[in-house]
Length: 279
Ligand SMILES: [Zn+2]
Image (cartoon, rainbow, N blue to C red; front, side, top):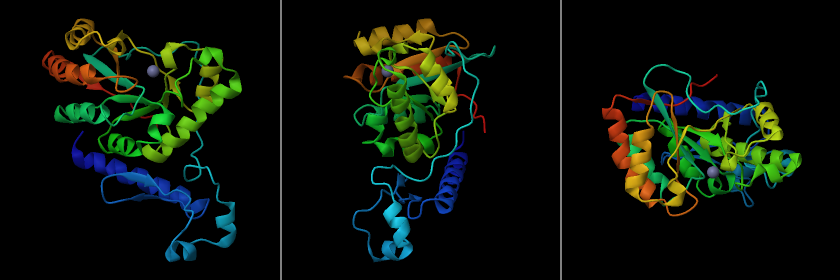
């Protein structure tokens, strides 16, 4: 995708968010800081004179103290699946790259740099507790055309949680992603690939399709950069979804490996893609 197209998309996101803000809770809009980041203005504890004027007192009192931003977009309910999607159903020579557990300020920017160098887009399944401290990285992902998915808030084993706990893990993460990225995630991935009925049902209700993977780089075991490269290159095939990690431990091997295997895949004729948006 061309850079100007990316910026156009970003503007559309901002315009939509601003419209939602003006129709609902006063005082919170998404604004462009001028530094290429999208920031949700938090409920200000000490608003300046201009902010005071802009807010009606009643609206100010109604402002939630712990919310993340504007009124939420209502998700479209989806069909409840029994299994996650794990490959691209496309006969062409396409593959998809996914990066889990981030964002992480030490590793994610390097991965984004490499993707940008080769003009490749990827999916990032992010955890809410990492997003909340690194919102600018999600703004960058939006700018550069990547797709952000929901990977829960704290990365728990969902099969050990009750339905309410799973809902909270998923919902809070979609909220913070919406604030940082500009739209709610349309994809969900269960930590450890441990799915259960509640995860499928809640994901569908929140407008997210479940996505697994085909090839695990097992980079989380830090097996060595060469091993990670081998796993991607030998696992490459049409429709494959590759799993890597940009957080959750020392990911310097992952960062080094992608610099090798990404050009290899491109030279081998693979087109690296992201899911088509439903809207
Ligand atoms: Zn994970």
